[in-house]
Every structure is written in structure tokens, then in C-alpha cells.
Length: 307
Length: 307
Image: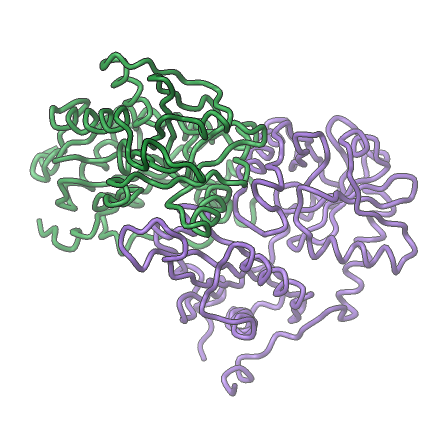
């Protein structure tokens, strides 16, 4: 099979595989016009998915929460993800799966249950949510004034594209010369940033927010690494002041892994450099990847063709 | 020009006019993956736009609020809307304009300011947000338990696609056998429903919420009609109990106009029928349309070709 047209990325939509440049959705799809969609992103490191089952578990939970039922079941979705990566020929990839509401079968209907839901998936070259050079010096994190949307209005554990509050936070961060932002909720508790969970280290203890944020798979990995490394870690309510007074701060996301922060608002952390606990966790995170932790090898095209 | 392929709807994107079935956006456009887009919808009644300038004013304000700058200026956008309608051949139409963040010019950038923003517009056959037969008997409105996203997190006066809380309200409404939903904020004040503003009538006075809702153009029309008809009207904080105890309730939206409500939660209003003030305003709204109120005739194809 000639896969050269897929080198920039391979996508699946409505039962077909297409180069990423051809993957599009109708402007009238409710996945767009009502942001009525859920998604997930798993990464591929050296020809192996990382924690694929965890991502599929979460994706299925997100779909169920929003009553989205595309034609493909879990096994079919998993096969689609393998094939997108295999077609792309990428060894390191960012792999997205999206369930969209679609459009009504009945013309003029405004009822979600009248829509044909559908699945889109695609593999793209790996992207870091925070550029590598920024990770080296430690990211500069702005504490945004825009409050995070409350969990009761939009459940942040259902991975969604409704980023307006996070984007407002990004505008604030960039206006002030910072790399990215972290949002607090209206009660002043720390939540998450655009595309990442946040952790802080205080007196040797690692803390991450219990609210307003995705239950990230990298977050889960960090908590497991802490347990394995004998570092005390807790999921807790984190007032803004605790973040500002932290010894260390780091971000965690599929698109980047563990990413140290060296400035939080106006404050420099640890002599304006990534801190030791953050660096140890970052090192362990990638070391474990090399050791095959939670790894699912990407099936090759030939193997897939024979299915 | 052969416009038959545009009969189901005509769209404009990236400088070209295409049949609506061909109008799509890349799955990687941030207008989709971050719901980073604003939009507006104007309607065409018997070959004339209704309050086109008001819609363009609001669309430009929404773009400015989200720092979206497509290549087309106001005059160009207006010309695009005229041409979409003319190409579709529709006398009564629903006409959407959307500004999207687009994708980064710099590969891998996560900064909104690195994206090429773009405009999409399209004309579709008229759709009522509440079906005509439901409007006749009066809509049944469910008061949702899902709280509306707070104004401080996502400004509801900037018309956006982030409908998750509204969709949750719709799920609740349909689960209980109701037509559609109205949401209150976390403090218990009435806001808006999926795609419409709400009004109530109490002791002859018309009230509509001062928070949590779009500054609808139909809402504005209703307030103007009230003034012209000698009906006292106010924009005010409306506790949920006031809505439940109303004499009449009606919805207002571009895709339907003034739409009476006959049930609010478990309560029947006015003998389970549309109320007299609601019906008088609905009648006046369409009567004014026939008289050419705020009307901008749609430019014909020939006139446009000669521009």
C-alpha cells in the first residue's frame, strides 16, 4: 500500500481512511455548531501506544455521559486507531478520537436524539503542548482572572472542546508575556490549564486539584510514579495561595508528559529553574516509556490487512 | 448562472461559493477543536433581511471580543450574505455567518495569535427552533437543573457554539416529555434556553432576564414592540419562582420569532394555551415584517454580478 499521502497524518471518517488534509466535517454538524462532541488523545512513543486502554475507557465514558453512540464499538475504535497510525508511518504520534453528534435524520429537528452520531479519528506527528525549549527553562505560568466553567455546568472529566474560558486565560497569559495559563474556579480553587493538569510540590508532598479539571491519564501516571518512587501525593482542594507559595509546579499532559514550570505569576520558583521533584518525575515518566510501561505495540499494516 | 445546485443551501468559505453539502471545515481547525469561533444568524423574510445591520453589529462585536479577524471586512461580509441568499434562490432563509480561529501558520504552535482566522457563511431554508405545530399549542418548557455557565467564564452576549449546558438542559427536557428547556444560573436566576431568549408576563408587565443570556435581536424587537404597543417591559433579574408564577411565558429567537409557551415545568399557563400578550406580540412581530420593518432587500444575482 502506498502510504506516502498519509505522511502528514492519516484520518478515519465515515468508514474511510483519508489523508489528514482531506479530513473535514460539515459546517452544519452539531459537533461544530453546538460543540456537541467528546474526544480523547492518546500518544504513540516509538511505535507503541501509551495507556491505550485507559484512553479508550475514558473516551467511552465521555461518549456515554453525552449520549453519543457512533456505529463503531470499542474494538472497532481501537482497530481504527491502530490503522491511522500504521497508515501515517509515524513512530511518535498524537492520536485523536472524536465522537460527534452529527446532523438530524429528520429535516429541521432540533433534538439531539434525532442525529446520526459519528466517529472521526486521526494520527498526527507528535506535538508538545509546551515547546521543548520552554520546557528546558521551565514554563512561565500565568494565573488567569477568567474563572473556570463550574463542574456542575460542564463536566470537565468529560473531555470536550469547549475551551472559551481556557482560551481567555491564554490571551491573558500571552498579553503578559507568559507561556500559558492556569485557571482557578469562582471560589478561588486551582483547576487546570489549556490542555494540561497542574501539580505543585510543597514540603516534599505532591498535590493536584480535585475539581474543575480532567482526570488526565498523564496525571494518573504521575500519581502512580509518585507511589512507586516513595513520594507522598494527594488529590486535594488547592487554594490559589497554595499554588503561589509552592516549592515547585509542573504541568502534565498527553501532548508533552511532565513539564516543569519555573515561574508562577510574578514569582520565580527554585531560582527560576525546573525543580528536582519535577525533573525526577519527568525523567521517570520517559524512562518508563523506554521500558515499555503500559505499552501496546502499533499493529503493522500487513497484520491489519490480514484481519 | 445555474443556481440549481445551491437550492439546498449556498455557502461561502475561503473566497469561494459552494453548495451547502460541500461546505466543511478541517477536523483540526481550532474553530472545532477549541470551539474557538463566534457566529450570528440573520433571517430573510420574503426576499428581505430582517435587521441585518443589528446582526452585523453584533457579529463584529463578537469577533472583537474573541480577537477574531478574518480577511473580510464588514462590507465584504454583507456582500457575502447577500450572495449566499441570492445563489440559494430562497425567499425565506436562515443565514449564518461564522468566524473561526483556523489553524496555526507555525507548525505546532498552540498560540491563538498564530492562527489564520477565516469566515464561513451560508444560507439555508428557514427552520423554526420550535416546530409550527408546537407553537400553535404553546411550547412546553422544562426548567433544567443544569446551571447555565456563568457570564464571567463565558460571555453569553458573544454568540458562541459552546452549548454543552444547554444540550444537557435539552436532554432533561426530552427525558420528561417537554419540548425544550430553560436554564437558571447557579444563583437561581433565569437565563436563556437552547437558541432562544425567554420572556414572562406578570400583571400586564413583560420581563426578560438581565443576565446569562444573549442580547437577542428578536428580544430587542420585542422590547421595541412593547414600547410601541404601550406594554410596560423591563430587563431584570428574574428569580426562578417568578417564572414559575408567570401569567404568560414566551420565547424569542431569530429562528422562529415570538413563540408562546403553554407549560412551564409542571404548571399550565392560561388554561394550557398561548396567552393574549404573547399572541399579540407574535402577531405584531410578523405584521411588522410584512410592512417592511428593518428590511434590507436581498440583492439579486445580476445586480451582484455587475458590482
